[in-house]
Length: 385
Image (cartoon, rainbow, N blue to C red):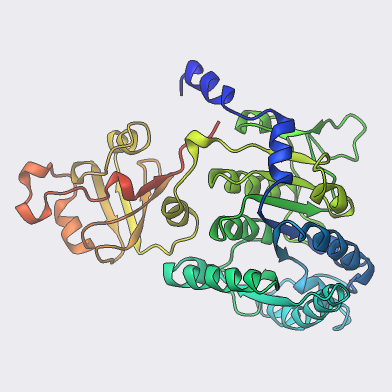
């Protein structure tokens, strides 16, 4: 991207105060709560912390639809099972989560009941998000809950998700839920009051009040999760950037400041969206959620064509095909150095594609003279800086 183009796109960004006002005025929001904000040091569920969160959420619900993405099922299951450290094995985590889900759901239900509110639990897996019919069903369920005045409490279904089919952490899940539900803003709340260029415990750590582009993150050192969490500042930054690709602004701060965050939004770090980089709902789903049926490997010329020039992927630029898939499936597109370029909906099956690879359209039979992946159905990981 040229410097002039960058300057033009940056000039389109809202002033920070305007963005904060926009987040404050959002009609529908997703609020993600980290594990450490829901449990005590002894791993018991923190009723007082949950009550404080719920009080702020209910106040915001006077004008806004609120969806909660709750971490903490594994952490909440540790105390009832007398565990003193987070389980490591998949089966151990899933069994602990099955206990924690009940305890945590009961606490959310108890706390919202103080305000006459009912909650509904929505458990998702990556395989749910990977299939369009399941994502539509999840959205319809959440929409209906909100229509009824019920508070959706969303969590990854840790009891059945496999290590190969996980969202990775609830920060990423919250970004995907925000896009799925067509929310207007995402709040990422944990135990840190915002983004710093290094560990905020260090005396010279500098607070970052806004992130406009990836350039603002180049000097940021983000750490891993704590002893009860799976994420950390790095996963929150990644989730924030994921949400902004869907055109959803993000506020990152601590759960302790939730009243200020859901109020005038003068706290924490805000992440700007880039309108010129916003992905359509389909392209966002294809790139970040969809199940893939195989891999198409392409040469350097094809990489430029699909990323820089935004052209369709043609057979002449294909060097190899991995996997067995049919027309209409989502495939991964990989460059000559093994880098993942993006994903797209393939127009032919893998058997035909192997015969087409490397050939110009003029050498193909009439029935195959079409883009392998049309530009309208190709989504790439082009830089957002």
